[in-house]
Length: 443
Image 1: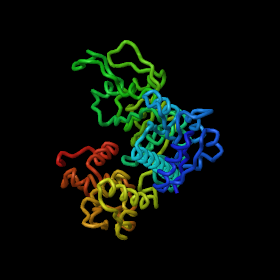
Image 2: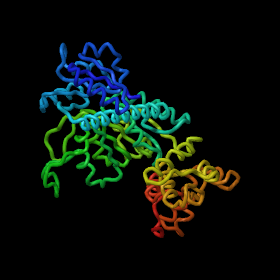
Image 3: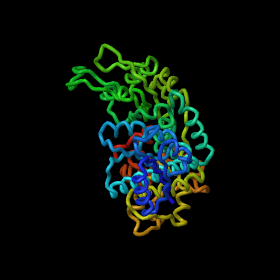
Image 4: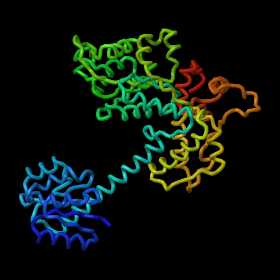
């Protein structure tokens, strides 16, 4: 039963309130002053309703003893000032006397509902924290446990983080987990995909520009580095950053200042950098495509993310979680996998990793006629080569290269992506990484 404490020095009002609340099924305890109220265990109540003006001490004094128990203040001196002061001291809400009974009951029910929701949310957060300790990420395999451990260790620091992993493994999710567990969590995290911005615009987007700095610069522009001041800057696909922009970024890391394109003066910024890439930056340094000094600045703490195919039983756990999430997002009833679907999911290579699984499941949920996800709905028709086949000893990259080169003359890019079970964007990214230029015959 919901317990409410009434603190009111006028006995008539106190008794009337008690009868009103008891008729609604609440258990009510009375007190005539703050010191009388403190005889009781305040934490054992679900709500405290207290008059503002009481003998001995104001009703707001009880707020410090209430902890997480909401306090509703009553006052005969209804004014903006008294309401604001009460709220500033921690009151959940206030109501002016004389008040309408229905108005009071509505306010009490709303405050109690808010408290129930807050407590349920806290329990869910605790459960989620125990089950998935880093940013809601799912994974019990040793590689993911190592990822969680590194996130927990590096997050409270301001150290630069370099996240490594194939496309679709969840690098941005890890970056956001680091930010949320850091002392900068109240400030913004600005995420930038370096591969998505044309080379001619990347410096302006990141570092800003002054009016007249180049043709078309009709006004000054604040860059994303400045926008992240006090927070975190996440640069995804940093291996695609042009050398000129790399030099500017190095200055941000070394000097803690940024200079807009066309500016004569620098501006101090306090930014934590998290970078991610699916490229081999060491090789990029050796090839002259990435600055060695920037690489060493970035590589303070590496967090390598395993590919989905390397995560064992995590694959099925992730599939169940993503299916539930997808059904909820698409406003569909809960669905479940057929046994053969689970078998196919477990043994598929997932070249597009978690992002590919999300896309596969979204398509399956949309096409499903009922709550059963069948293998046909998954449409993942390119599993790993059979263990006794001629391609058994090929790595995934070698198999990808072999498949693309053998079929690109007869298939469009869309067909290649579909047969490999990945998106066209992932196909393009893997072509770039593995240096497989598109033939003139493919479209």
